[in-house]
Length: 85
Image (cartoon, rainbow, N blue to C red; front, top):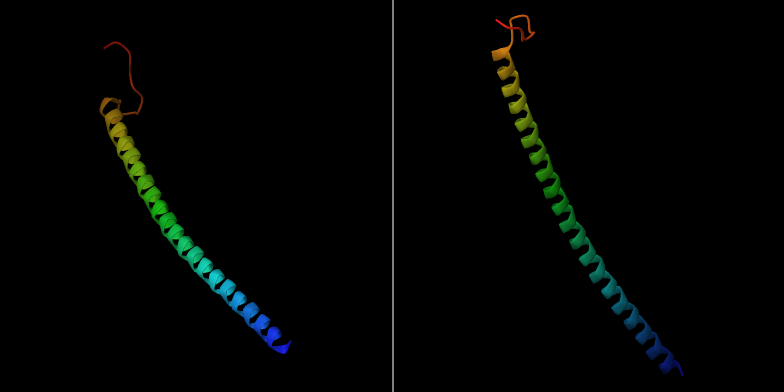
């Protein structure tokens, strides 16, 4: 009976060891997946920041052009005179 109990304990330990190994492999895969998602998130944020900066620069350039264009046609006092000359 004692031999059967020892064999049963060995099988149980072996089963638990296999389960532990499986869990370790699963955890490692999840960590690797999370790292890759983190890298993708960083890349996506960087792209968004770059696009935002490009949009800001384009709007700033447009505002500068609009401002210079209005000055060209404005009266010295800043008010346009639409009356007849």
